[in-house]
Image 1 (cartoon, rainbow, N blue to C red):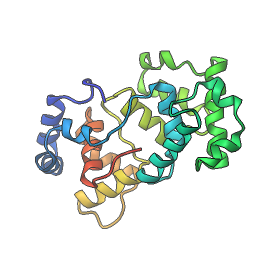
Image 2: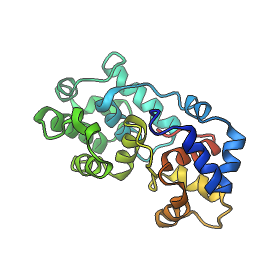
Image 3: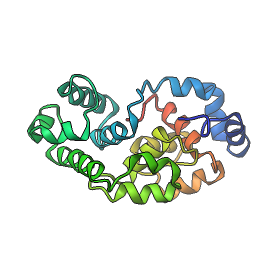
Image 4: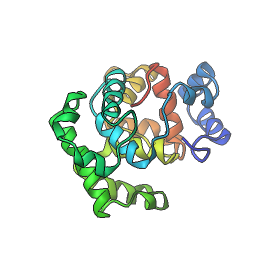
Length: 212
């Protein structure tokens, strides 16, 4: 995440408005330490979207392994759209990707090549406009858009309500009897605004997991 979304003001805000967040911040330390644990590589906007497709509905460990095997098909680097479209989709499946995910990755490549998805201009758009642009691509849903906004663009007020890890962490941190629904999670996180991305990072850290 960028300095825009990770600030001393954000940490102070969370400490002041939410005693649970204050406890997590005191326990896990500066956000830089939380970020360092993610161990993610900068891969560009296109690579970030491909990786989000690979990671859908998988554990962190499984997603990382499949992503590495996918990159290995292309000599360990993110393929260009042309390279991805040039190979047989079955090769993507040999890395552990489902048939649907292979199709989704190809759809991203096609949108980029056609100009329907202009990755270079996404950073100039609002969060809502980016959601609309990304979710128009087959296979990119709310969760993938959240991951892109939060980790690639570093937007500071993203709450991935569709992430199971976030919901489990909130259940444990707030001593909830049931897994919170997305609406319940939004209510819990309302005081965090405009630093919900930061709060999300601390929830992930509390489970000792790393978002894909």
